[in-house]
Length: 115
Image 1 (tube, rainbow, N blue to C red):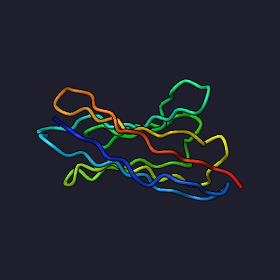
Image 2 (cartoon, helix red, strand yellow):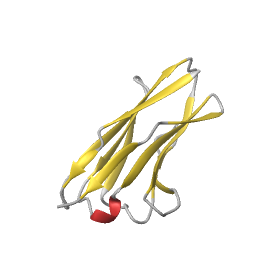
Image 3 (cartoon, rainbow, N blue to C red):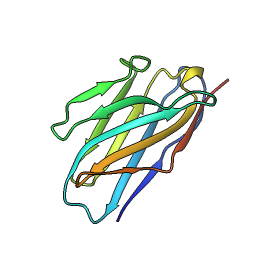
Image 4 (cartoon, rainbow, N blue to C red):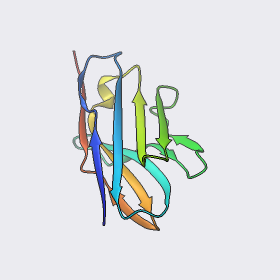
């Protein structure tokens, strides 16, 4: 079994920054795709950022240029650096790992952007 633990969420003012982390532990042979999704109240879950096993990155249109996804493959951790945050970035953020061809989700971490 694989466990994902997220951290780094919280309250930040507009224009501020946060860094989210998601660490995978357990029986892991290979991690391929990793992504961050988010879900705001009353809205559907959407892709924020994705990083492949070769570290190729993709971003949702709403965050492109402001957020950066990265991974530390030696520690099975993925990061999401979020800069120039806006109130519309307020949501619960979820990490998703594909581990040995199975999908695992983190528990979610709340990000609130408000003055």
